[in-house]
Image (cartoon, rainbow, N blue to C red; front, side, top):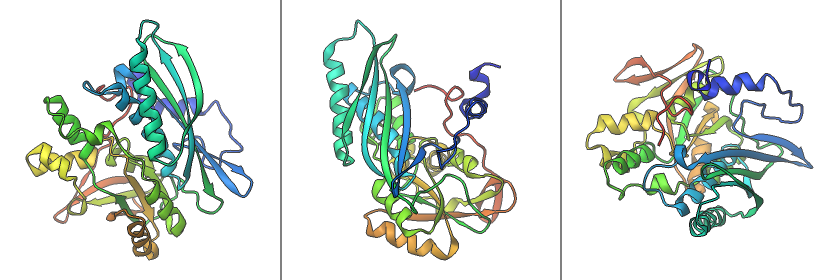
Length: 321
């Protein structure tokens, strides 16, 4: 089968069979790797972006640099790490002018600085189209690393911030309205919230919502299941404004990607404490459901449950920007 037929996650599982990692404490299927480094963890993640397939029309080159850097850093935030810096590999068409590349570099530098780190270096090679591969490096205390799996029945599901803003902004952008595109163009990695969740030591698992809530829940459901309460979803005011009606905004909150909020699974006895820790760090943590023993993901609305499909963003299978 071709890559476009199997999708990103199935392709990654297939490729991972060729590798054996004895040093990565998170395993090959996580969004980041963690290597023991003295009395802490060195946490690393890499993301690749191509102009034609990852960035929507209307996004400037400076915003491309910011977006690529923030997306790579977000994987570190979901591990409870603090950022150290990023390495950037650029693929550059030979006919491309210098000024757009300067803008990409400004965006990369501004994003790194805004998140308390720096661009450490990188590489540049010729390419058919502009592309950016960003490797993010961070550090997590030895006993505060957040894996992506480990949820147990009865655990509490919670998310930071609000959901659907990026999908709503993208929909508005496609209609020619760029006034709601800030969440799309310049996302922020939730380091303060991630560190608070990790330091509280009340979370069993965590991931960022780059691919959407529904897709992320299916990835976290490792042998168990989740129930999400529709009424508890913190729908973004941006989504509500872009949608014009609640049903579409709620759909974006469930299935839209690009929010880069954190989805965590909490021990029931620690849920309130973790929420207070996130609030003290300047964020917001909203309980939205719980884990169950039965495999699957469900949406509960007015006491009725329906299956929540795995319809978030997935490379190769989802429509391109």
